[in-house]
Structure formats: C-alpha cells, structure tokens
Length: 281
Image (cartoon, rainbow, N blue to C red; front, side):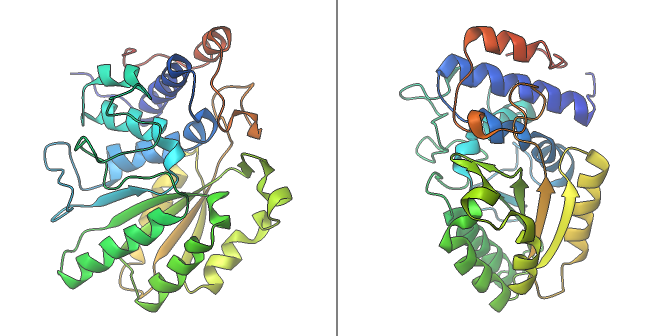
C-alpha cells in the first residue's frame, strides 16, 4: 500500500471538503480549508489514537475535541481518510439521518467524535474537564482541542482559560485556527483583539506559542513545544497562523466563504487547484 506524504493527504482532504460542501449545498468551507494542515498532522502523525483503539471515554489514549463545531467538514474528511469510517459516508454530509450532520453529533456513536458541537465556546471547557480527569486517573495521555479565533470572543473560552490555569491542567494542548476572519468580517474589525491574542493567553496563565499553520515543519515544532510544556503546571495554547480558504485562490483571505457552499462551476474551479492524490470518494 502506498504511503502518502502529509501534503498529499492534506490536498486530498481539501478536495473532500470542497466536494462535500458543494453536494450538500451548505456548510463551512473557509475555516475547514484553513484548518486542514494542522489537523492532518495531528491525526496522521501526532495523536496516540487509532480507529481500532478509539473509545469515547478516552481511557489509555489521546483525545481530540472540536470546539469550533462548524469546522465539521474538515474533521469528517480527516477521520474518513484516517479510517474511522468509510469514505463513501462523506457524500452524505448534512443529509437527514446521516452520521455527518452539519455539526458533529454523538447520536449515532460515530468513531472519533467525543462530543456534540455547535454552540461556540463550549468545547474547550469539556476538553479541560477530560484532561483533568486524565490527571486524576494517572493517565499520561494528552487532550487536544481546536478553537477558532472568532470563537475566542465567547466568554466561556476565557472562563475555561481561568479554570485550566487555576487547576494546572498541563496535559492539554489547545490550538486556534488564527485566520483573522469570522462570519461578519475580520476579527480585528469585529472585536479588535486579533493582534494581541497571544498576550491574552499569556496573561491568563497559559503557555502560548505561535506557528505557521500551513507549514508542516512549523506545525511539528509547535506540537513538540506543547508536549515539552507538560509538567509546567500550565495548559498550552498554540496559535496557528492560517489563511481562510487556503488552497483555493478565490476563497483565500476573505470571510465570504465562512459558511457558503460553492456552485458546481466554482467547485470545478476549486478542484482544478487541488491535486487529487489518494482518489476521490
């Protein structure tokens, strides 16, 4: 069986995202495309978790929580390409009764989904609770959590930040898709904090690192720093600098594709920019 490089896997996952959202005529391609590279690295290189060993209680393995639930297309594509469920399911995104709802659901017991997601801000709290439970149970594994920079305007994110620092939850590595865009515009225009997000996390008592979210060497280094911080008494936040809509030129750097599905013509144009490497589903 051919072994694929991380860039090859990421290119195929971007194709999956575009095709899924186009078929569904609904979904969130922009942030899914910007999050593709570091989620590809996490599931194919970093996490101590496999489709065969996955269990929802997370005992004896790493765990991942998607707090920014609207990024479901990229998570579904990553899970399918990693073997958590058949690739054919990707064509059922947002269909009635499908496992692949618009936001992740635990109703059908789908592998790889730790919690239902959709209400922004909640996932980090749940991930911190899971990480604290691991510490209490002497489980040496790590909990990972993806948040969005627009999501970081939610008050619950900062309540969770207080909780994590207070309890010294240093077996959690959270990361933010730091693309500077949200549904109504740029994060700088909407909330004004885009330039000082790192300082905010540091002031809340967290370790905080920045990395290029589209460079696999930078991603590897960032996760390495996160693991090295274990035992520091502080949780970790990685700010992955990314480009909204990465990989498709007419989607890049704009909030217009936060929650908009491409037309068939736009889908064809997008796929023409993304190399098919592993075979379309």
